[in-house]
Length: 116
Image (cartoon, rainbow, N blue to C red; front, top):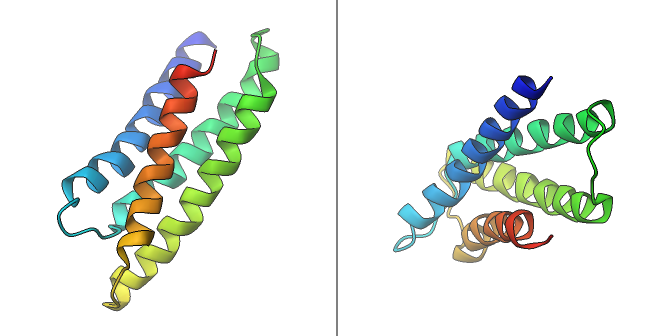
């Protein structure tokens, strides 16, 4: 079970890297890339599975923190989905939308690492 959990943590971090990395890479011309939605979906899916494994593995968890992270992750996923749809339709993507996706994902990383 530990190996599965560690693989999920790895994939969760990859999802965050996809969102934040693309955001930082496009900082001069902010946009939302379709891969950011893929990263957001990966984060939501792996996060929910990890939350489900917590009781099975007898781990202590701060469910308030995890709920806040889940809500932020869902907002990031929705915003990234909107951005992906606009990107594929060739419509302009506002800098606010692009920075919201990247900034909120970065906030989620900060909550994960700094909130004990």
